[in-house]
Image (cartoon, rainbow over all chains, first blue to last red; front, side, top):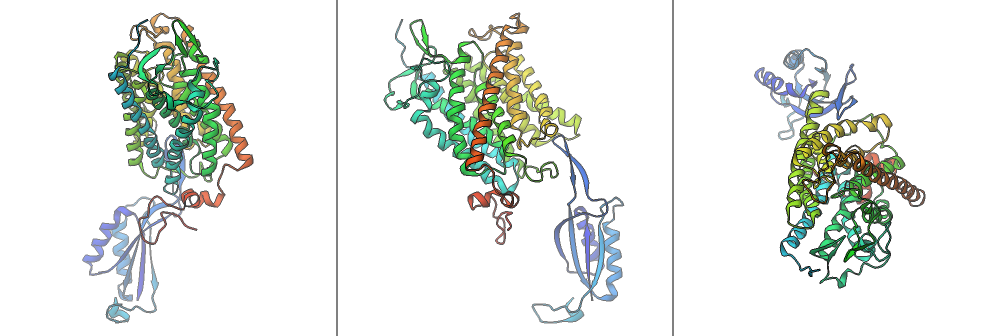
Length: 112
Length: 434
């Protein structure tokens, strides 16, 4: 079992969500996040003065999948989230020890 | 001389203008409140609101007499005594001439100017000033700076027959300032500069952009200021007459042109016309037309406003060059706009539009008027700057002016007022975290 975590551009959330659902991956958790990568943010001009803005708004998307689905899910997310410009984000997978569905008490892959 | 009897039309307009000018201070609270970060919105707004409280009380104790008394027969201050307003119900206003308006209406109208002037200063010291120290500052500042300067500019003295006694220093010299370019805007702008220097820069200034947390609040505030300013400028005619009509029209067109001028600078320089720009531009127009509104023709008001918008849009960048944190651009808008408006009378002044006005350079009046205007403007600037530095320094060395670093970073609202502006979720304290 894997936890896929993706940091993506906010405007790509809908595309990623639709791509995942149409591939049969249902259930995800989305949170608003801020961060920067190798470019250390960007420079903006406001009221005639320049500022370095390092923490840019991002979306953090978390999806639980079975181990066999992990590579497919990562490809779906990265394809859907890609704009080709800097700041497109990252996707990674973490191995999960246990999952329990709160309502029924089911555990393991049945709880995904 | 025929006895002057109360005129109900004039009185009604001055009373209505009084309410309009009061509204400017809560409007200013919104304008400034929206411009600061979410964690300091309440402190910013309360600085304006407490000023209404403090100055109103001081005004009826001694402020009115200090500004508009004439028994001291001094050009520097009115009179050091209790205001004595309580017994004035049947008196008419005598300010360089008898106006058919109750003295109490004039006193209430002028009180609103005394309130908004110190409130304007608060924008220069946003996010970091101890609230009680601000309250002490307001009381001392109006006493030592605003009340005397209002006397210099607005007190035209006690006229009995052909004799005038106790006229103010600048009013007596023929400096033209219809509604307070010197006494209100240059005064507040210079004081804001002094206080920004004494308090020092906010943590993270220049590193973070410290964007306004609510531009809709800024726009509502700017709208209320614009609305109230009709009372400020046209009410200063102290009558419902042609001068008031000229002032109201000039106020509108100068403000409109200034908003456009500021947007134009932003579009050309930064690529984006902004909502903060349209709000700031409108205020810069209102400021610059304030001294000139009853002395220039409407076409000149458009030119004055347009130049004000462009000039102030460029001037707000000065703080980055000079490295002082005038947080909400009190200097760039009020000091620069006020100076421009006062000097503009020296160019555009016209006795054709107002019989008590003088001709400026463009109307064949030569440079005499410009010289007087420059003298008045820079005299008030220097007095306000120096005295404010002394007051600010004294408060800083005794009770302290600035909140602790942790309080400033986590949010002055919770530190000073135990409240936060926005309780948006049950688990938050409006952006406050310890």
